[in-house]
Length: 260
Image (cartoon, rainbow, N blue to C red):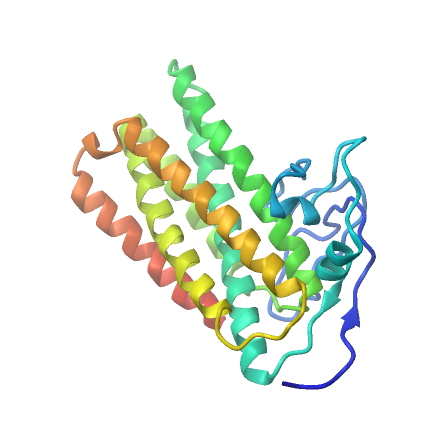
């Protein structure tokens, strides 16, 4: 393990992203009260009962961060080159994945909200609201750990919106099949990352906090998967083919984002 003093990033405040687009040469997003996430969504309040609230604005009257939480959310831990590669890959891929998830739900809601099926539009909106919390937290994590964002932002935004809108145009069941396929892959990927974090990581409070955040978000994604199944995802036209294509595309996107 490298022996060096952890670097400290900006102190904890309610943040917003000032810059919305990123490239392989861009600096990580900076935060100030009142802006939007890299997915162009509002930053939601955190729930003090959840680990992610350490990275999100809190409502008036919510308990403040503890000294340990302050350290866990503002310091970059000392890492060996291999540990740094693991952390960077996890955060880069997850931030890009959450950006894609936001745009999938954006596309689905854009279509469904214009139809007569208000219940399905509201269902998608509720899941999308959860994803806004995810991208806001990962935007902060990418800054804290000094991770280079993926250069594929514009591509993922366009493809994710197209996937969401396209499946919604096929009907509610196809939109739910899309959600089921995407969330299945994401849930599996979070489990793989949690296994990676259990191997040879430094004794620094940011690491167990990251584990808790990944666990929380994995459980959110699996809840979305269950919601999709409960809303007839498996009755979508050409369900098996649609699911296989979408899941395969997600795995390719993860592989590309981990490298680019």
